[in-house]
Amino acid sequence: MRWLLLVMLLLPCPGVAAARAEPAEAWPTRDIRIIVPFPPGDAADSEARRLAGHYTEVFGVNFVVDNRPGVSGRMGTEISARLASDGYTLIMTASGPLTLVPQILGAGYDPLVSFEPVLLPAAMPLLLLAPDGPAYARVQDLVLRARGQRRGLAACSTGIATPSHIAAVLFARSLDLDFVHVPYRGSYAAMTDVMAARCDMLFDNAASAGRHARAGRVRAVAITTDAPQTAWPGVPALEGVRLSTFSVLVAPGGTHRLIVSQLNDIGRRFLARPEERARILAEGGAPLDLAPSQIRSYLRQEIAGWNAILRGIDLARD
Image (cartoon, rainbow, N blue to C red; front, side, top):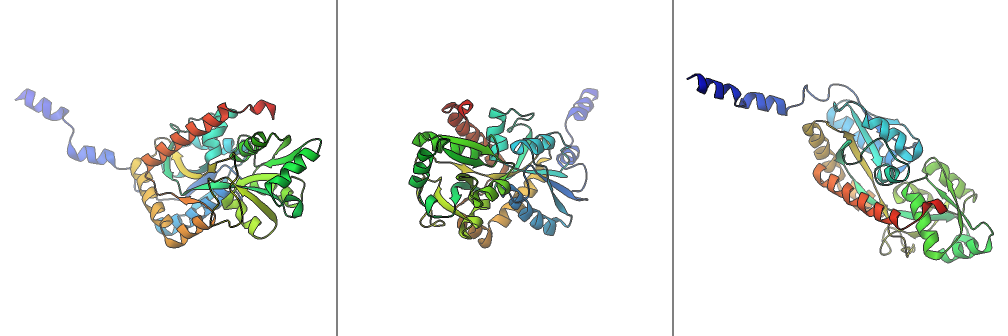
């Protein structure tokens, strides 16, 4: 009988296994911080604040947005990767820090290992923006301006190693244009100088830039989609530049799967509301409804796609 007792002791107890499958404590019992590695007003910041409001209503604790901008989103994303995986810190990061920054600038995190994917609301195109006025009405006007100036175009971007930066490079290369890259710390600062005509052009996320174009403060010259979008009538698809970007909610690697699953489920139901889908479509985006494992696969594909683009261009020239 001793051997039978030993076997019984070595076998996992169903009650113990179930207990280990649960988080260490009831969650959440205190406020939760959402780190945004960009300045206020950027697309990721707006998405974080929208979700924070809903999560606060559902869970009954405050979800507090904490902006930590710097180095094109790398600083806040890198800080977040080192924080405790206890469910009380989330990160609303974006395509740049996860797909471009590690390849161009280097980063102290692995996009596919250092984080647990939680929620990915949408894929969003970029708008090619220019100062409002007849001199910037069409892509051809930008081409003529570039070839008529000794220094070429002054191309603002939302930062080095961002989709905004790479889109400007692809645009200039596709038309053999000279340009001067002028990186800013986020969308708001770059947009301000486009409005003041201190920059000739800017590629920016349609979610954050669209309101300025619709208000007539800047001109939407083109959009980085395969075909014109009903959300942007009269704005042509840009030949040679087919890009999209995204904001994604993640948690530090090792965060309990039940916490991640709960946040994903509640977030997806919120984004499935007719008014939320209508908002994304009105911005020109494609709503996404993905489980955490599907988000990880999506990120892997995006990283591979951007790596292929980077292999085809020489950023040292710019």
